[in-house]
Image (tube, one colour):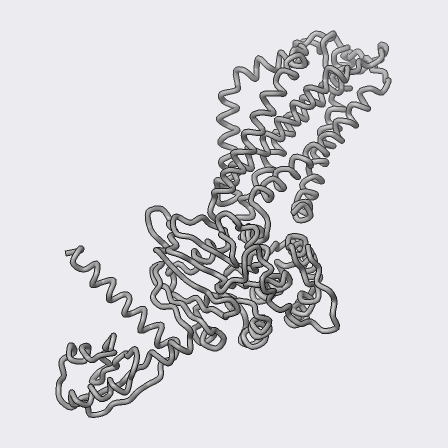
Length: 332
Length: 262
């Protein structure tokens, strides 16, 4: 185990370029056609992801989309039935121990030993890690005001989550995999997590991969986003690109208009009727779409920026509709 | 890994030591009592059909009692090896650390076996020491006195207590320890296959019940063999198969734990 040298003030260790067994990696995580099954059901279905090194990567999806299963496969908690997973340059199936040396994982549910005191849990984590920075752990324990002599079972759910996070950060991982890290945290701690911890860690050049149901949180900190549904990738892109590209054009007409006329406008990938108005989801140049809409007799046209939540809902609805259409003829 | 496991096993070892101490005390007082009873011809037939010249030594009685105790404590001690961590969700903490599953499982089973060997070995050493100590067995005669069938015990004499030959009993001690280790490995295997400690307990109890029923007739025969000291001759022969079976159970546990999804 490598003990970090003490310094007067804790500063996250910078991402060590080229310390892995392999060359410095462009991607911290690479999933290629990953398949995970529960029984005969494909929970993760040919999922491919690229998580750039140093990014804060939000992993989104509705309940049961396969997020936790994907994360568990990345950590090596479960096997895979197809494809491959490469984490920090190591194949998880054959070099799982090596990848976990440089990876910190915080589970969705509390996975700490309730009978231990906080200080004992810290000592246990230290002994189970190859690399440890006591100063970092002390820094985060103080930040969260966690009582070191208290037994873990007596801590609140939020405090257990904070302790788990402090332990993960103590091993100074190059990649943090966080499954719903802010669930159970009160608004203040959530704010601290997002604005302080994520910033500290990401500024050190490390990669953060986290799943969350709170889209506003993801939007606040993530620079890359992937949305999955039913184990399949719906979209993966840089958040800024996504927000620049995805626009909504709200239009209303005095005269009735055919829906397929709106769907036929170049750049429109989905039309949502909202009462007497239509919301055209546009990928690309929204200005051109407004011109087409005006040519169709639109009375009012308005370009609206889409936030992550709107993009998420639009993509998932589109994905579900296309799934329903694909399975429709088979069902007869 | 050993640090973390030792924190769990040390509590278990304390409980095991307590159980063995109670067994030792019961054997100590029980052996003296039985030898007293044999001296009374009035109670000889009631007490047992065992002729007085074949009665067990202190250490032989210890082996009988401790074998039963070992059976129970290893079943109860081994059921929480993996399933409890799975049940409480702490297994993901371990599995996300840079440790191989083989190392995790080996540490869990290994420390439990070391705990068993340590506690059982210590208790047996004490009992062997007591057995080897020169001591006198007092013989009493019980007589009915008075009108209400009250009895009075009269000292009729004393003889030196029989002691065990360590060379004869140590293979049996080793065999019991190995059976205990085997049961820990079996519990470990079962606890990797189940999701909760209660499921493991139910499965282990079912296994023990079925095994007991199947073994019943043979065990009855074995008890006579044991008393007639034939088991001491059998013990060295049983050691190698028991070691092989224990290793097979351990390897099966490792394989299942390696493949299991958590």
